[in-house]
Amino acid sequence: MQYHVGDLVLWYKSPVSAHSGGKFRNRWFGPYVLSRVTPNNVVALETVDGEPLGKPVNVNRVKPYKSPDLPGVPLSPSSGHDQDPETSPAVLTALTN
Image (spheres, rainbow, N blue to C red):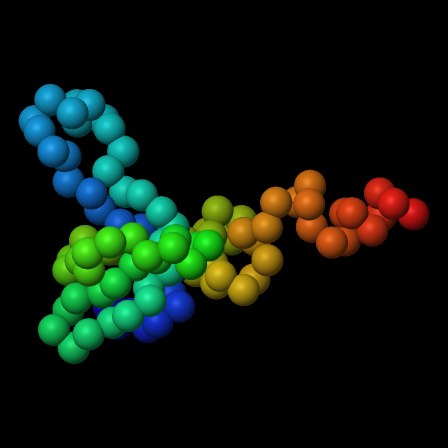
């Protein structure tokens, strides 16, 4: 799988200890935005708000984020799905009129 800057991904965070929540604990976190992709399979991540995540991670620890609205379709950061529907401009305009 090839990743590009701006792709939304989930990040696999391995447990710190063997007793950190059991086998049913969620270990995929995100979505995060790829901010940098290097040729040696290392990616830098940032939150959707633009905050850097920290150290770069190996590409084996990320997987594509799929939109919950349309299964199988990746969600892009500029699609508007990351906005709170209560504070979107269309809803606020409808409420004030």
